[in-house]
Image (cartoon, one colour):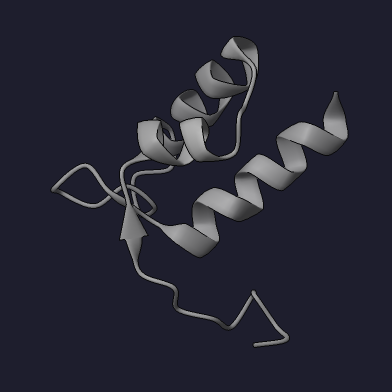
Length: 64
């Protein structure tokens, strides 16, 4: 799998993703806020596509 933008990796709970990626408390809050303000990303069961969560997390880590 070379292109994550096209990959479909499944879904994960955003809190579990933040824990796996060892995000800081501030980054966790930003991740959850971003997901809540992007309704098409968050599924009705509260999960998020892994590739979407990874993309947001990567941007948060590069920003600070």
